[in-house]
Length: 90
Length: 90
Image 1 (cartoon, chains in turn purple, cyan):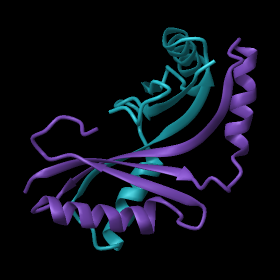
Image 2 (tube, chains in turn red, brown; image 1 turned 120 degrees about the vertical axis):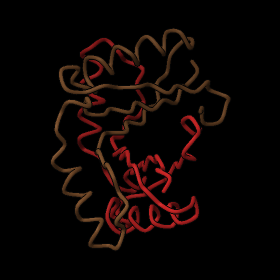
Image 3 (spheres, rainbow over the protein chains, first blue to last red; image 1 turned 90 degrees about the horizontal axis):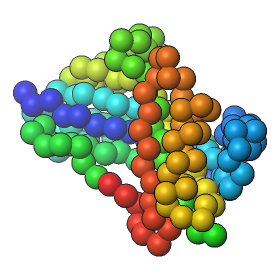
Image 4 (cartoon, one colour; image 1 turned 90 degrees about the vertical axis):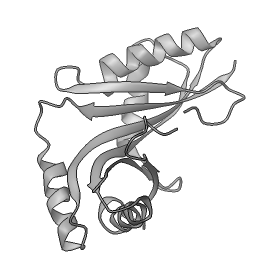
């Protein structure tokens, strides 16, 4: 079975505070970077999934993203999936 | 000054164990997804940086990634930067 490479980006919903991101943003000025307007920290989950075809891989990855990888109450997610023989998708 | 949108992806180096990722991978089979070969959890940091030009933005973001956002001993990072007037970069 082909092996699909995928990335799931999980980010806090815009209405949810991100104290770790805010602390990191404040620390940047101590490194001399003063133009930082916003900084928010999310998760990037890299997966390799064996599936019979792309549609099955996509459906399984969406299921995982919704149920396991992100908490839909406070987080959004987006999925990037690659075809097996291709380079990294946009 | 233009506002640059950027994303820094921070991932554990391949030689570093990822127990949280491994636990998540194991949990996927309880959701009926059995083809998951690898799953590793990294960070996706979304930033907005005001800078006079793209080269300055890039240099400041590289500095931040190396010194603040990632721990180069155990983590790799990659930077995606957008020009102010464009859509999301590949």
